[in-house]
Amino acid sequence: MVKGNQTYVKEFILLGFPGSRYLQNSLFMLFLFMYLLILTGNITIISLVETHRRLHTPMYYFLCNLSFLEIWLTTANIPKTLTNIVSQSKTISFLSCLLQMYLVFSLGCTDFLLLAVMAYDRYLAICHPLRCSSIMNSTLSTQLAIGSWVGGFLTISVPAFLITRLSFCGPRVINHFFSDIDSWIELSCTDTHLLEMVYITICFIVILGSCAVTLVSYIYIISTILRIPSAQGQKKAFFTCSAHLIIVVILYGSAIFLYVEPSKQNSLDMNKIVSVFLTIVTPLLNPFIYTLRNKEVKEILRKAFSGT
Image (cartoon, rainbow, N blue to C red):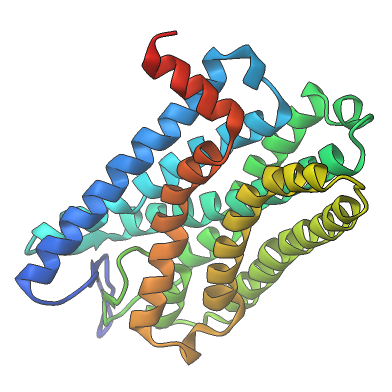
């Protein structure tokens, strides 16, 4: 579209991971394998929880929500990444790019909120075991899960709307494997001050806010565990929380590097690597960490495969 002497961009180029054909083929096979594992692992978790009544607890209910989220988070970026690797044309339309950004960031925000909710659930289970079931009942569990989803999608609707008010005159190359908000800010030829302020505010509120809730929950959890007189009891309590804590460390570490620490200080290649951890590796680890370290799930899987 042309207006005056300026041509307004209606499609962009996702640069992805440039390199030799060998590198491209290797990345394609790696990402495809990881995507299939993510789908298989998270669908398995959802199926197990749905079909076994002993897993109908708030912890597994939140885990189901997390698994469902991870399926859609990776689906929002991996298929397009795979297509770009094998295609000569790496273009993406304005609307497709905006939709991908909205889904990835909305699901990402929901991910942080769900992890904070799961930390609170672990806090109740460890610090208030006698009152846990009465506090974290099915009603509160549903409200917290719905609140996380609605909060995540409403939050990103604000920068998404602001992006639709921007103009893009060129260049049109996005040096990333998915459409992120930083790219919209960098490529716009109009004032992005409001969008940048909203973006920074969201990053601090969602990432650091949920991190604070998680951190405080685990401070209380660890202090309670250390007061358990039995060494066996301490070990069991730490084992229960360790899976969630591993995911939290990876996710928040990656997110703080990308979004709280100014990204211009980091190399673009490093940003891509950290983004892979954030949007692909973490969803891949979730089902394996939560199942392989969980005795109940391992017992159900063992019975399912043994036919007993």
